[in-house]
Length: 333
Ligand SMILES: [Zn+2]
Image 1 (cartoon, rainbow, N blue to C red):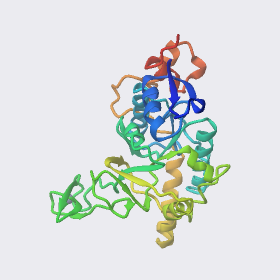
Image 2: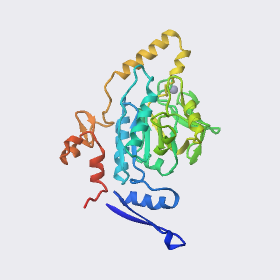
Image 3: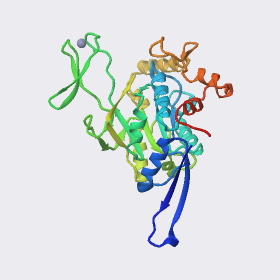
Image 4: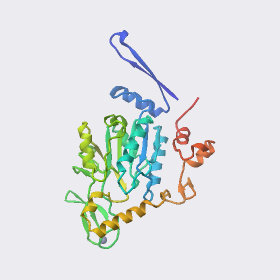
């Protein structure tokens, strides 16, 4: 436990005010001191709820997200993982409900930040801490449409920069421009940039922003309401997303736009929905990237479970926060 007193300077001693605050970690205390000059207090500065929208994990994505949560905790910043239940009746038709649920839960649980993640992202351990460091209301990492296979020769393409344009190129000669999933297009590694829209793969929100949308009303029906609609809605309240071009986020699959199926033939459209429904009926893929990594329980990557059992808190099984925080920076006296 770490205490810090905030003496508020005042020219007249009668106006002097004091805040005596207590923090769980040294990192929280440092952030509170920094913020005392440029912001307002929070009981657990930077505490973040990571909300995967659904649990239909693409290969490796579960481990990457869990490792990011655990690493964030290890650095003294409280971070929870709370999967949002798949509430779709047909594919995509309740994605807005699920995102709204994430907003509601994060704010009512008292988190300062909400990180929404899709089930196909593969962040680095420090991705969340780097996004938090900007201290901005809405921040997205840099996402490009993935290209894992050359359509000509089936080999793995590589990314190149030619005539100031980013391209996917293959040794067989095939190439095509990289599709960047934000607008307007920004180059990599050019810092924090204001943008109009970004793909929703990963978004960091300061939760007080949801006060603009009482009762979980930020996200509308996603069948027709896409990124463009939602970012226009945020703009109505004076907010735009910012793009962290220094963090390139790897995603497993191309984004799905339900309205795009309107342009398919009837047969292709039926095949698309059939494949989607069959995929959603599979159990969550929580397998580790490397099967020999520690923390695998019955084939699933659960590095927090053995520690929970050791601490005698079996009822907390599945809750990652307790052991990570207590094993890390918390000094309870
Ligand atoms: Zn090729």
